[in-house]
Length: 376
Image 1: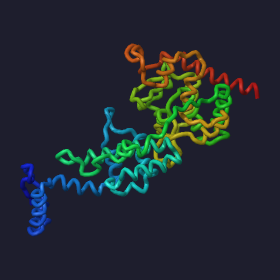
Image 2 (image 1 turned 45 degrees about the vertical axis):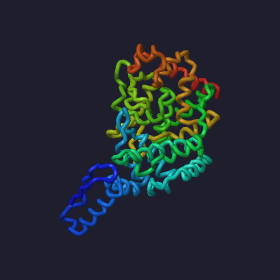
Image 3 (image 1 turned 90 degrees about the horizontal axis):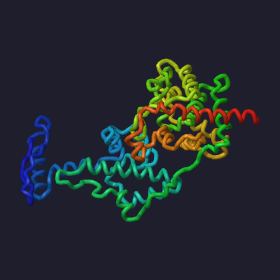
């Protein structure tokens, strides 16, 4: 059954499907048709009204699942880490909103929740609400009516709260922590000890190897932990590894120092079956690779004398004093080049020509550990 008519005041004709004739009897179909004609007589678009009714029941979880599945950037679908972060935002920090209609999320509710989250974790609160703003924008645009109006959330309540100065992003200061250079030897010695499989479990050794990998390469934790064996070339003339998935989407091939080659060779010797990841997760984990090495990082923090995160190892790599030019350090850590020369006249994909630099850094780290042993 279908009904067709013109919207009063606009002259636009609408053809609206009532439902299948084998499921609806004539009387019910006629009643529904009259309802739609009544809407058109009142100047309403029945298609827009249908979308509005559907949108009113759309939950935040519905929006999240649709966003994760269908959102595309200029580089393609969302990455697993981005999906995980968005899911965590909804299921952990906005649990009580997850299964309620997004149409019920108001400016005042956003202000109240943002302030509450900020009391415990200001930076996390910023991240949660950036994700929430993106999800609500997705809900608005996905349900936009044919005439360009928004059946739900005419204004994104997060944006509305910011514009009305109901909330302001919490100040985020750039972190500057590194492993104190005079403590690098003690940290390296600690990690080396924990790779001894006759004293520690394979999982402990794997976590220690991951942290050592981050120190020797300056890699981001997500890039290092997701490294696959198919991207490791142990037997090439210049052994190297490739980061195929990076934060800035730049694929880069990086040479191995002798110390890193020994580390990855040890990981390969410990490989079980067809494990695809260099740093595999514990049995039964949701993903096949280590997510992080928090337990080992706590010990590293104790040895260093300050609280450290995985990213602090990246800064440590850059800070190590081996007369490595900063532009080379930037390329080795896969930062986006800033100068014209680096952008257009420098080899950025294959960095095997920087083997002397990565070897110098690794030699310096190892020397600090040897000095620590001699002093003790």
